[in-house]
Length: 275
Image 1 (cartoon, rainbow, N blue to C red):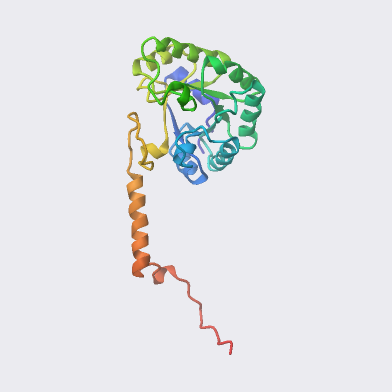
Image 2: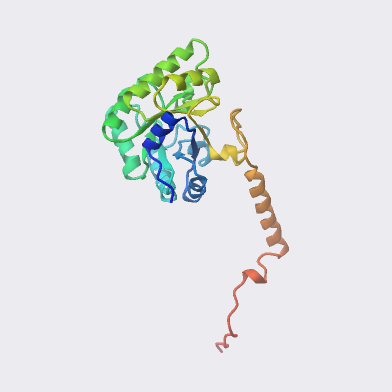
């Protein structure tokens, strides 16, 4: 069996220049498939609000939902590191809330680390969570939980805003995070962050020079027919394959083709009549 991935895996990768890989998962069956691919870490993202629960954003995702899905994913994983998102308002209100909810994702959800959005503003929460022996992955740039404050989902870190991005990145690192997701920022800005930071950067829409990459598996497999981000590479049309299989099943049942004799059970001898 391959060695279990941990925060040490991320630190070694940064030192050696090995690229890190991450994908999302939200349930046991998919987690097993993702884990078997050899991916370094699996994120149970609050993106489940969009791709699993059908919500327009991530804001309505609750702690109970995150714990439920994280526990299911953790049950299917043997090798990859499991990271779980802290949902909206589970850490912003107070430092004690942040520590308590992060602890719940490990204790009840069986995650190995948590991820939270923000930079300078959440540095106290990151520091306190780390001091409670809970590994933290940061998330800067486009932070979907802040879409209303940002005026929508827009590319971050352009022009003078690049300095704010750097301040956020340094604050996350200094607070003790073991890595940081960098989302939807210009490639040159992400490359500069990666050069300056001693912790790994995990890019999503941040160019090729980050220390690792992450994608939502629904996007890369063509399973989500909503908005398709520019940064996604579609590796398969699994959605088309699934729709075709479902349609064939419906047609077979309507035509009386399924179930066939090979799908039926038979008794070894005829049952006697009751009367």
